[in-house]
Length: 245
Image 1 (cartoon, rainbow, N blue to C red):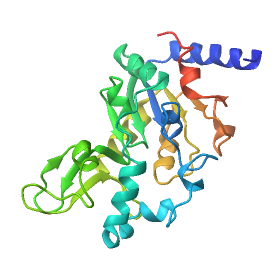
Image 2: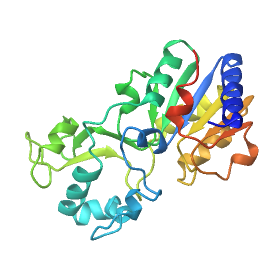
Image 3: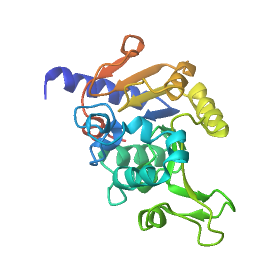
């Protein structure tokens, strides 16, 4: 690693040491080091070939009109149930357990933050681990969806079981957004990691930050780099693993 990277990780350490109420805001790049593909990189879902574009298959309209095709794609590409947390997830859980990190706000639906031990997680786009019958609201776990044949149906009433994930054309959960905003407004340090900050309205939440240190850790540049106190264009797990708590 370069001296510049080493100096940046030392500065990150200093900022974390000085902070008392940190918030982490993360995207797909947090989970790519665990083997889950993101959407927009060279190997991402948007650059893979399907009968329909991924953004169309993950839309509410597609879910309603072509449920068989939706669940075929969903089970194949969105249910990575054997994936384990990486260094980023583990370090963030450690920061929370030591009282440094007040919450995690994530755009991911994989549940890896909780698997690593994090408790206070705001899942802006829902979770593959929560699924509900559209008729009777019975809860089902991710394995029920994974092991189902075709379109999953409720074993109680026969209704279709919908993953509790926010599809395109659907709005974010209001209580989740309000909770995330409240934490961001109270934070003295906000670390944004593994996100290109182009997915709205989620990306707009960072505008509520008025604290001391804004840090961006992402492989590629973002539109908010110019307002950050520190920008590190490296893998987030690799970077956070260098932090001592």
